[in-house]
Length: 293
Length: 287
Image (cartoon, rainbow over all chains, first blue to last red; front, side, top):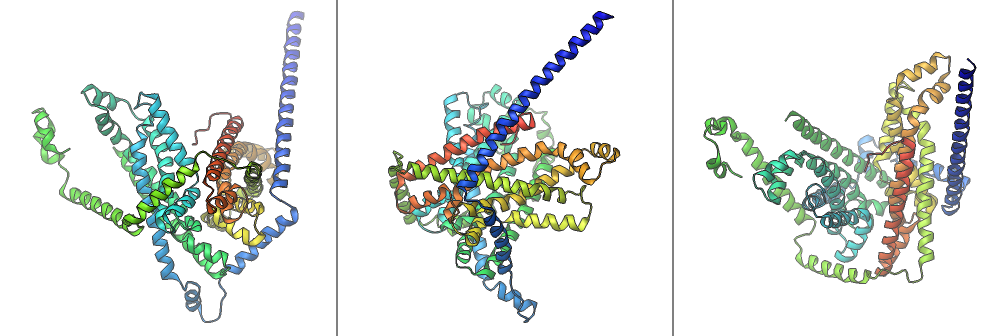
């Protein structure tokens, strides 16, 4: 009996010691992370010029601003007011069309080049580590620099207009889609590849008949998703003169033409949501077909 | 690959040889495929023409100009501006940090309000969600431009832009996380006689906190990237320096700034990923 109580006592004290030690570690971690957080907080408040009164002013100012952009009822009737509000509708629709064309072209070019590069960046398809490494870094560089920076440079080189926007978004798309595509490649079933290899297929035939049929639905789905993202980018790339409706939006915000701001923002949001809806349905159809197979 | 090239190698008992009509692509389908290909090719050609890719002269001058400025980009140099660049980069990080923090502080209560299982009122849920959709539809850069008008040039406009844009996304994510919690834990807490607030604190919060924190960290990463360009419209940070350098043609400094941005984003990604793994206790599969 006594030995058992001794054993139990020993277990309890051992547990107690472990608990105290664990608590101490935890407390120290909380202290360290809390301290780091407080430091980052203080630094960001200082560098970011944050003051409580400015916060109030900013949030209040935003509501004031939104209120000013909303159209005023003049008493001429709803239709007359709407016509007044959307006075530039024809021109704006043309700019929206521009925006969608930029996104479409950039996505297509980006997907095509990303498709060409992604197989070299897949570890299961290329034995040569150097080729994989090089293509991955290439995709990374294309992806890491923001589109707007590319756009600034291309506007300088090619002049103001949609050409610069297409090139900027396309380069970013190459990087983003190339990475996603190569990840899809790395997760495929290896049996078809072995089959093609076994009948004497060379590398291109392995990719064409062993890999592409497996990955194509996924590639198309990712490209559609990227198209949605690119429509958003194309809508703002005009801020630096690279075409699309952003150019007009930049102008009216800078010149305080309040009613036009809300009109344009609503147009952009509607277009983006409409395209999202269409792309989502297309994607679901693709995925549905895939699961039926 | 047409059928003709395959036919000789096919086994005579191959069902495709025995019943060709079963395996042939229906005429309508073939027509539809062909129309699709022609339509896509046509759209592509139109888009190329519309955006000016057929303007060869412009392409050639642009490319030669591009090659010329690429030459000037190397070697990258800071030309004595390292202090200014570092300060601008710190401003960018501060914008991302404080903007995300502000969005987090607002989005947690809004997320609770927007969850169907916290407030079961259909109309309230619908109108709050649509408001968030509206906020999300407007890009951070547009918010930045607006806030430059409201609070003036500087990093503070960037902070508010990031915060407002992120409230839209984070609130939605939080609300969805809260809607997906395990009901049994809530019922258990409620059974002990807990009130509404206590149920949230002990029934819901422990379940959703890891999701909320890891999403917030993920957004901090992504905001570091978007904060680098907000300066282009005057909202503070390194983007301001970058667009200034492009305007005055100092391409070696442009390259230096781009490299600084890449290094910073890389470091932040690694640190944040480590923290995320710590918080949710496993490798996050998100890209």
